[in-house]
Length: 560
Image 1 (cartoon, rainbow, N blue to C red):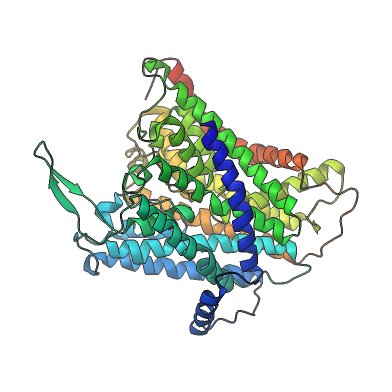
Image 2: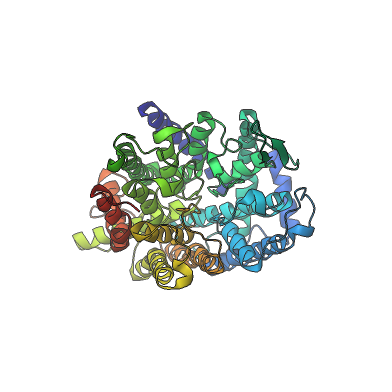
């Protein structure tokens, strides 16, 4: 356990530094090893799509471009889902999906959520997997990275009315980052036993004489971007607990590593752009401390298990025996910290307090390592709030990296931060009151409430994992979680990009004696404190009604 977590941290630091340096070169338009191959492709894309790569965009133009691009992606994927029954590469003759389920899945994949309320192996054709879902895995991940790069760029420019070009950032993200690394990851997965084919399902007869269906398909190509792009939606309903998706402890460790890679690397991109690497490492340290705390507490609760089952000891319910307690806990905390949503165990089977930690990770807003891009720009919003609070303490106008933080930035920052808890609480309350919401609960009492709370937290936080005791494949949940995903992804991006535009337009002020330092341990711990107080306490009443009260009930002899 100690060796594994130490190795993970060391590899993450190494990847953050090396991948971060590589990405810094990409977005500062410096030479890379892939330029001879990719530069001609990039120029062809610009010429074909009538894009002027030299034209910079204001934050409003950047935002409109991002929203329009993802809107087109929604319509394209919705069309495929509604017509997959008549499209090619469908050897298992899977029919087209209903309008509400197509809406939910299309929204899910353009928002980088990958929430799937149905078993994908029996619902999605190979054509839809490859040309619909996998394509959006690349594009939704790239969209998040674009916002992060724009935020980084805002702190590195002096009095600029523009924040870059969305189409250029998108193109370079896909060509230089996501495609080449996903290809290498897919090759590794195939070498370890992850399948990759277009064969129809196999029907075999077991030794007992029963018929069993063995599902197949293009897994490795989907699995690579699923994990690297922190998308999370599995080819199988069992996700990364399925041996075809996650064959061994080695692939399990590798999946944890790669789902945390891009979020970690972007902190170093931040440090490189602002010409102060300590700034990036301070953000990374804040993320890592919160991540390790989550692993520790979840592991303790799962190791103790249910006191009513003292003979059984640790809680192995819902966990793969191939991975055991610690690797299941590590994966659960990583996937919710990284806003990935892939699972190798059933979160619904965790102890109440053990399942609460992954839930809190999502509620904090994709900032602990975070989804690709979303983790960094979410953390930077909290960093802005932190220096504002520090400025109030010393009676000075707050500054961050030489940019004065004023009322406009704070208003937009708070709006971006508060959108998530408002929507989570409103949708959860509605589902607990309306009969169409309550009838999907399979567990009574606080555990059933937690299932609903987790579902909407996962949707709004664009995570995609679930307390799967809730039947979410209903018209009510397909529509409400779909709307929640859209709000959590794009409505929160608008005030975020407004902050980006405002900061970019500000003049860089030379540091003075009274400026609060933002690259040391004091800032790290103050940032963590602000995250826990501002981002965490707002959810305490809801958590008290769910996992906290269930935890005490369990120790008093009552379970649900």
